[in-house]
Amino acid sequence: MSFSETTRARAREIIARYPADRSRSALLPLLHLVQSEEGYVSPAGVEFCAEVLGLNKAQVGAVATFYTMYKRKPTGDYLVSVCTNTMCDVLGGQKVYDTLAEHFGVGHEETTADGKITLEHAECLAACDYGPVMTVNYDFFDNVEPQGALDVVEELRAGGRPMPTRGARLCTLKEMAVQLAGFADERDGAVADGGPGEPSLRGLRLAEQHGVSVPGFDPKTPIRSKAEADRAAAAEKAKAEAAKPAPEPAKAVEPAKPEAATGSTAPDVKAPDAKSPQVRTAETRQPDASTPVPDAPGTKMPVDGPAPAPRDARAAEAAGAAANPPAGDGKPAGDAAGAQERNLKEAESGTGADGGDPADASGTGVRK
Image 1: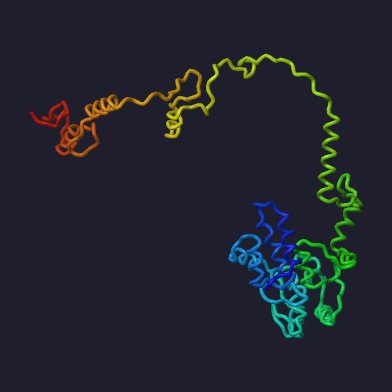
Image 2: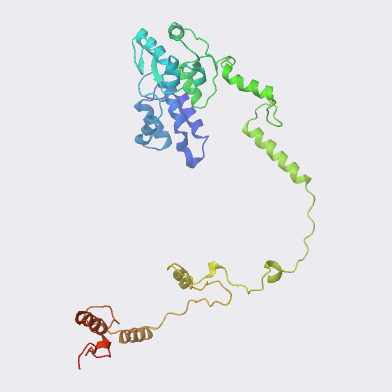
């Protein structure tokens, strides 16, 4: 499907609302936009969103299939949703749904033959204090009964626009999708009707009765646009800056002595960030209580020195090998096996040094 130029212009306007490197954030309103033209999110709509945002179709499809407000097959002019979750079910919501389903011969997410009504049961419509509730294109009809719900839907099929309990006057699903995409309802008097529900007003009356209010809040204050709010904030900031007294000339101040600044006479030491690599490595090897604190006054900190010459390194390696001759039995270098053998023989014979063990006392393990 080729989308209209109006839809393409609106898509560009939606994308322009977001930073250039965050354009994929426009995906949700774009899905509502394509739904406003087709009545559902078709494969062509998914491809369109992917094209204008530089995404692949799998990424767009993953979002479109996650949210229930995006319909994946053609939907009627009026989406009738009946809450059948716990609270509304107890109050009769399931009976309302069953009555509509039987009367129109459709089930969940099915559309009547004339294409006017699509019925669905909803898990929750977030209006438990008005239950059982039914919405038509997301506008509420509160405290509905089976016959009352049937009357509303029959009026819709006859071309009427029954007034919701709360909210503005009804519009078609495509018109609603335009609003969800972020565009105003341009119908004459579209938002002039409707009013709050009694449970909502109860909180307002309690606040008035007990004198609860927001300090300095004027409910008649008009809501400013972002540009107007930014200009007002800039003006207030400039006014506050102008009201500040001129700063006094800075006076020369002598640097504080260590004992005056910190109350300590200990000599200054370098900050931990100045530690040498050797100290940093040593600190990672499970230091114990006897490990000196590298930053303590008087502690000598190792510093990096020049690398040893190859000849010096070879001499040091030879000296280390001479001081640690390898053991003939495969034990680590430096371990003498004589003492171990002598102790083993003493344990087997039951005699020790006091018992006249003929073993050489030097620990060589060789009899004289």
